[in-house]
Image (tube, rainbow, N blue to C red; front, side, top):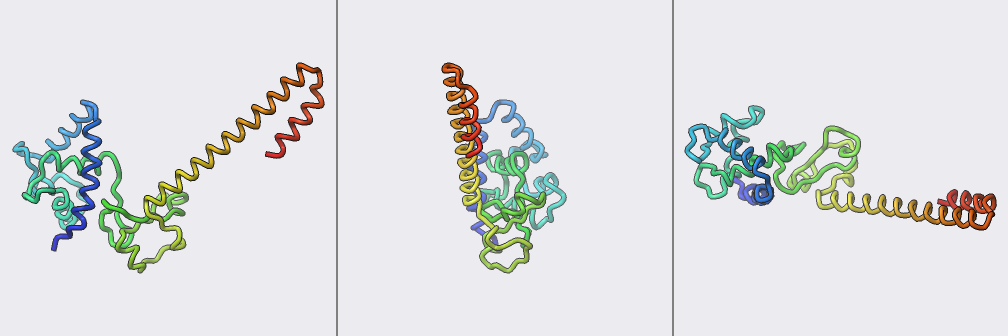
Length: 204
């Protein structure tokens, strides 16, 4: 039985692909058209499942290929038009769609990633929502290290904000020190002010 949840997850990819296409340059649009033409081997403007199977990655099983095809087929007519193929182009050319580390399903919708693996391991550990919810998986990092991508983005924002704050503090510190040095030059008390500056800098 076809999983309608996967269709709704592909809708998100489809909307992103359409947005990219709307803002793409003419060269990029030509590349997308060539990508479609490669799939559409008979040039009739539609990509059948047979044409799709011959063109996509040979590392995928026929079952996985058919599953992806059905998810891409938004109107359910059994073929893919240019608009529907845009989502595939996005997955092939813009990002690497990863597989769930447990069930091996392609993660086209929301999923969880191990923060520790992202920071230290070239091979990430990713889970679909169903595998995460079941909790029956074996991983060498704590369960708390698994974060959904909204949480990961928030964490990155917090880190950038902390880094920006540190840079601002450093700039302010040196600005104060230079102002003190300029004042010392004007009144001829450089040695005393240098001691004050060094003391100030050592506190930060």
